[in-house]
Length: 228
Ligand code: ADP
Ligand code: ADP
Image 1: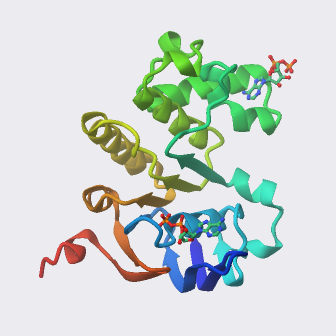
Image 2: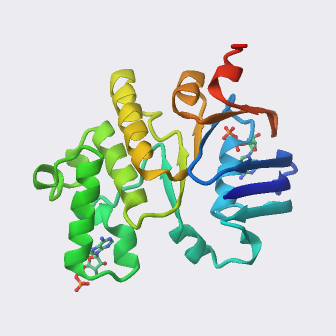
């Protein structure tokens, strides 16, 4: 579903962020990318939706070499959630959730219906929160809206870059549990970046342990934890 073939990314200043990286994520699989800050996780992630272009190597999404795709079209197939979800401050929660359907030209009624459904799914009652603005939400609630927004047009692929990194540990655990429950229904193909090994083990079907610019180990949780 997602495949990296010998991918290297060297930035303009000469920093090699990713070196000769090859790996695959199966359809419906959740792979967590874990490792210390600066080892290339975000760079890897951003190459999947072409926010960053590789220096060499090839990346496939749904069997297609993404180098030949229209980035806008590609991103419609890929939901993206980051640590500080950039919600539009002057749009309501419902409008924020419906951003991609809006860009896709869905009629207003259908957009609102879909947004309400997604808000329900991430545990925000749309009749309570739908007409609020982002600054009227807690950090955890904003992250939920970010997840709902990423899912609104039902993309097969999800990229999540420390989506629960900025909330307190109790809220984080709650969001992790809800995300696991959602993923059990949705079976999205997910790349999930975290620097928290516990989170990586908890969520991942497999865990990609990053070292400097490459994956050192890609295996199921039990093996990463050193079980026989
Ligand atoms: P991680 O997500 O694991 O923290 P990143 O992918 O953000 O790592 O960064 C990997 C390396 O690339 C780091 O050394 C970082 O400083 C460097 N890097 C990231 N973005 C840029 C950039 N735009 N220009 C130059 N170097 C960068
Ligand atoms: P119209 O369909 O007549 O443009 P809307 O109420 O749908 O009326 O939108 C009014 C404006 O608000 C639009 O021009 C657009 O810029 C913005 N907007 C509405 N819904 C969204 C959304 N879900 N995401 C982003 N922008 C939106």
